[in-house]
Image (cartoon, rainbow over all chains, first blue to last red; front, side, top):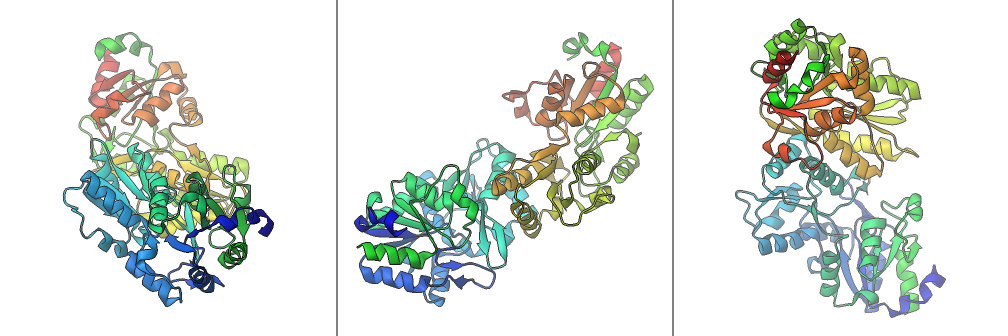
Amino acid sequence: VRAAMAGWARAVRGLLLDVSGVLYDSGADGGVPIAGSVEAVRRIKASGLKLRFCTNETQATRENFVKKLRGMGFDICASEVTAPAPAACRILKERGLRPHLLVHDDLVPEFAEVDKTNPNCVVLGDAAENFTYANLNEAFRVLIGMEKPVLISLGRGRYYKETDGLKLDVGAYMKALEYACDVQAEVVGKPSKRFFESALAEMGVPAEQAIMIGDDIENDVGGAQRCGMRALQVRTGKYRPSDENHPDVKPDAYVNNLAEAVDIILQQL
Amino acid sequence: VRAAMAGWARAVRGLLLDVSGVLYDSGADGGVPIAGSVEAVRRIKASGLKLRFCTNETQATRENFVKKLRGMGFDICASEVTAPAPAACRILKERGLRPHLLVHDDLVPEFAEVDKTNPNCVVLGDAAENFTYANLNEAFRVLIGMEKPVLISLGRGRYYKETDGLKLDVGAYMKALEYACDVQAEVVGKPSKRFFESALAEMGVPAEQAIMIGDDIENDVGGAQRCGMRALQVRTGKYRPSDENHPDVKPDAYVNNLAEAVDIILQQL
């Protein structure tokens, strides 16, 4: 791995980190930090590298998400996080869209400023326990009742790992509604190019000087590479050995975990 | 319509009828017959035409489904019904598959004879209230844990109409699991060619002498036509005016309801 990265890691000026599966494993109990990750974030900040957290997390507001991570010992604040809900709010305002929300209860405050009367689109997040039969039927009826259905999905992940096992992610429910309404969702969040570009702009580093570190072969690694970044896949979180045979996406390198990635990158500087 | 059908309806020897949306509108209260349909079934039987009910209904055993319809006044018995669950049981036995079931509680007895220990496939039906977040995650985990996931879906409908509104059908949930596991479901039920062919064989009428009458432009009309049948779309049930602009499927004729279809067909004989 060190050899593979020696050629390019020394040009790096900024890191984008995925959060769930890289910093910690989420779960009903709040989750647990991945060994070495708290210290790894601290070392990145001490190194002078730019750092931004780039997450598809939609089960909480950025404020509460950061509060949970700080409780685990991570040095992180809300202004360092790029997340789908605030990006979706900008799009809704730009286009005069009034959403029907199918999202986690704890995400609703992110949409406080948005007009939700007489909906003309559906915004879908990782609603978890809110993915009930009744709520899915309701979102479906709103969409099918529109002349031209508009479905905005906060991510397109297939599944993620919690402490008690794998869970279907928002992308699976997006596909259900896409099929039922014969519509294509607009994805806000990774792997959308616009989303990565806003994270890079907020960090102030061009794509070719940035590395994305994530556990999701398609949304983290594939998405970042399509924007011109290098990307590492960690062997934590939802990583599965079969990812290493992915037909389309090949990470610039594999690392066992975030701590190892930071070791190698800092040694190259 | 009469003119359109005059050329071919007189050669007809058998009718395949979809049930939900053609005979009755289903609903939590058991549903209500569509005006004229009880009498229309009686007239078909009196005419000497062969008749078979070809349904994707998976919310009840054939016995209970028929009991409900008889309660509404329909002249129907279980041996006249072609339905996905018995067809799936034959496939499971042929291939030595042991299903994890995600189906409606009332369908479970259809699988009484099937070994369900240590599952090596998932069978998905219209589970309705059983489409909970927990049950979907469980079916997903069974699939993703297999080396080569096998997903058998009892139909691929997008949605259907109940007395209290449109509901997502099994096809939407099939797409969610297909996407999450990167697998293609095997569909048992309409529009599968094998399913229509078994209904024709049970009726003893070749495809070119049979008419399918249904409310679903893709699963009833498109599926039957691909088997060499003529197919009528009724303007009841889930029919929507936009179906008449479907990009791929054009029914041999539209009729307002089953009663009108039977009027026209019997006049041609």
